[in-house]
Image 1: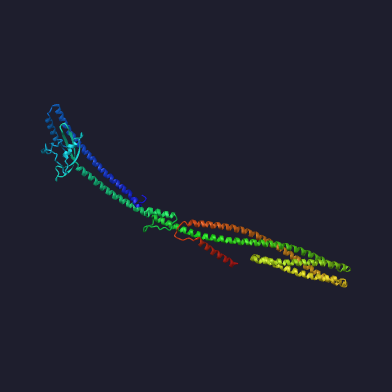
Image 2: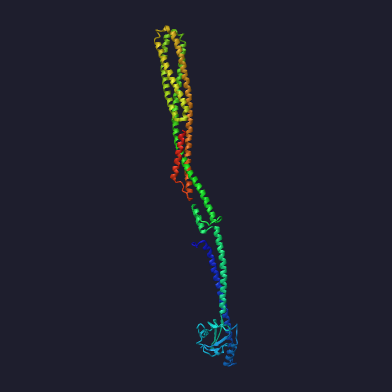
Length: 545
């Protein structure tokens, strides 16, 4: 059954039904034939036993002595000779030799030896009568015999029944033609054949129209439809589907529309999946680069913050020293102001001034060292600001101001050093220039006023520098915190991009199970595309920078 096609499967029940109908028709005709034959045989048996009962009746009269044996036989034969049934039925009597005892139609055969007589087929039916009659219940004999009153005369089939009365050795035989039964049997066969042919033709037309309707509805053989749907279910969306011309509403046409819609959908999904995969790889690569650069920037900011902390500490020290220098300059000013009143104590005062001048020399040396270190730190800060690029531009301006202040501090310290040296020289020659003390003190007052102004400016500048550096340090600390947070976010983005890339690969693998007749991007082509896009992005970034 599996090897049969759809049309063959539809035709097979018809053939089986027609075969069954033919068998039933033939069987019914044959059963009818057998029934009529049995009826005919029963009629023969009944007629023969009627004849036998007549013989038995006269034999009883013979045994009773009412009739002699010859009288009984003659009267029995007379009655048997007159028995008729049907159109041409009669009884004959023969004996076992065989010899004709009585023939009602042909009296000339009475007493004639029948051993050599044969029917039209060459069968010695009288010998068969004698042999069959030896059975207790008699029996039937088939033979052919000419039907009377029919022109032209023709031998037809006939059934004979014989039964024997043993005391007289009489065999009662009778026969019936069966050609009418054969003709009726053949007529029934012809009628059944005609009905069978008409039904077969009608059923064949019905099956043909049904096949055509089903085939038009399906659009092809169901096995072909099953193969096509199986291929589509297996992911082959490039399979060719054959349909008849001008087919618009069959199952196969709907399957073709479904295949085309699926192929378009899967093609779009595959294209999007390829683009998503390339974009995911590009994002993953960009996030990896961004993460590395962010980590590098965070490290640089940490170093900058550490350097600013050191600079802040040094600036605080410079501010303390400048404050101390300002106080010392104020004290020297007050001393020079009282110089006029302490002319008498010039020598002692000169000695004190000499000692104080020595301390001022030391302080100036410290100021010069601080100015020198501040200048170096300003240079380092300018270098770091240059490395920071656009974000370090403000810091570069502050570093330049710090450097200018450091240079001014160094210049002022040098000037103070020169003044102190002059004051020390004058103190050494104070004894000789006592008379000039007043004038010298006046000059000292003027010089100390200038020193006081310069030291105050230095202290003010250092205080401003300290405040500015503290703000820079705070800003850099905030930048460091933000950069650390950005680095964490970049790492999260990189992990998300990796997950996105993995999901994109899974999507590609899922849609790769469908064959739409196109060649998807290979992994190498996708990597090349991602590399080209990444290079283009880096070029744009470099151009913008």
